[in-house]
Image (tube, rainbow, N blue to C red; front, side):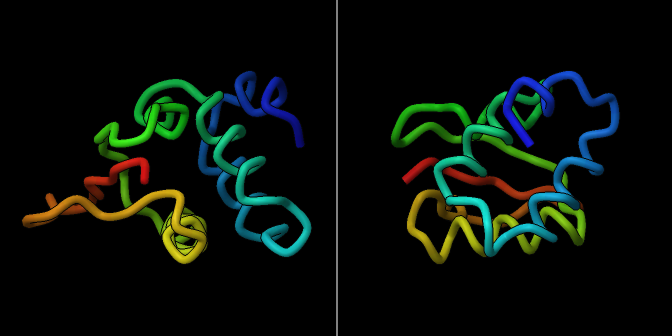
Length: 91
């Protein structure tokens, strides 16, 4: 899946699910690029180091965010998290 394809998909959850399912075959940087190419909240994944943003919390995205946190490319922001959303920051 390319960034160009991801940007054209109307249901972002379909893309996120594919990223979760193919986690072992897609690099972390590619995942960040694909997420960052999507519109809305996902554009935050294309930010510079230190940029804060929020995304909706879904089961598929949880697996992807956990992988990105383990890789050290994003982290949860300090403080409380809104219901059904994550406050993230580019590491």
